[in-house]
Image 1 (cartoon, rainbow, N blue to C red):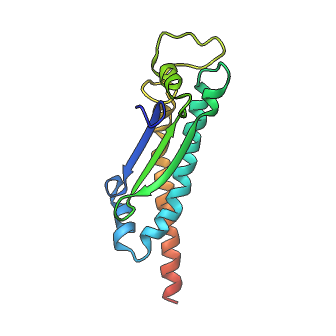
Image 2 (cartoon, rainbow, N blue to C red; image 1 turned 120 degrees about the horizontal axis):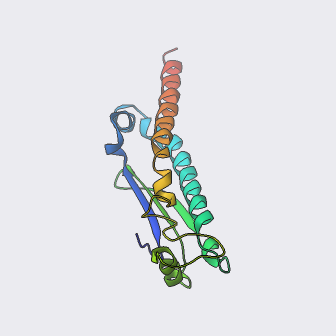
Length: 158
């Protein structure tokens, strides 16, 4: 996928569609959405950073500018901030075309290391390899938020 500047891997997960536990925490438990966000955001941010690092490790190297141009950010969006959006990409205004060319061109040789489609689109791509880890990250965030809410509810009834 091509981002604002060069190739990028964007991942958006609508929290309403992930699973019933998240819907329950967001909308049915008083304060649940805030608690879930507090647990989910750092985990999501960590996964963004991990994906970026995996992609940087595979980015073709000539001067190192392309590798250094990698960036990742996470944000809550939507009317009720119920959508988490990540953008992981490479290139800036100066290196955008170079980043896209290096990412998309399959037949380039990279004698100093790196591969084509280092971010997304092939089995070796960082975005493809990191996807299976997301289930565990979401499950942990949900469980941690649930435990915190259980403790909060238990202490309120004392």
